[in-house]
Amino acid sequence: MNCEICGAFEENLLKVEVEGALMNLCKSCSKYGKVIEFNTSTNNKQLKQYKSERQLKYNYLEVMKNALEEKKLSINEVANNLKCSPKDLKKIFLGDILPDNDITAKIEKVLNISLYELDYVSDVNSAIDSNKLSFGDVVDIKRIKK
Image (cartoon, rainbow, N blue to C red; front, side, top):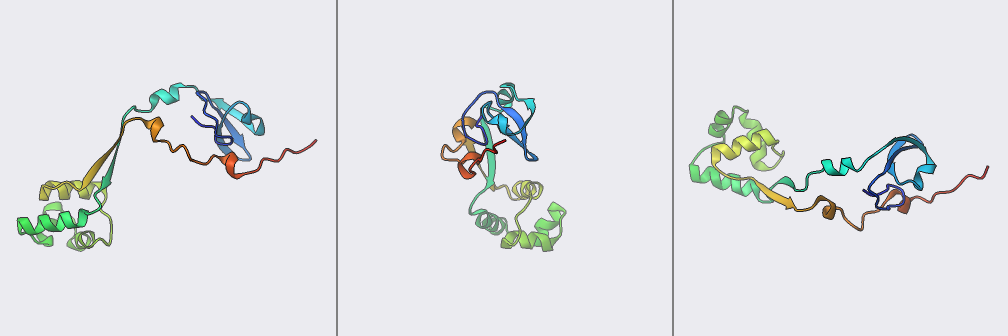
């Protein structure tokens, strides 16, 4: 895991309260706040090796409209099958609102289509952007002389 101040990669980070904010910091940066607890490397083991994210297809509106035309169904008929209001379903088909996961699953089932594209990330750690800014990159830390 990366330190939120300096960006250094360490297996074991400390949970530190810095001016009211909880941060995961390395040992050298932990002096800027009050140490709350010690994060062990078991937290890293809890991350799944493979992660899948479901995102709506960019052309999901076209896919839904084409499926309606192929099945020769009206929005009212589909709304009756989905047990939702036709007004809300029309807004979804026009793209005014995004469907939630439950409605999307029901639409997929009724129209026999797939509205999601699976995006697999093989390694969670490699998915972290290496150009990501840390807190220390943005803020200049000034030491108070006693």
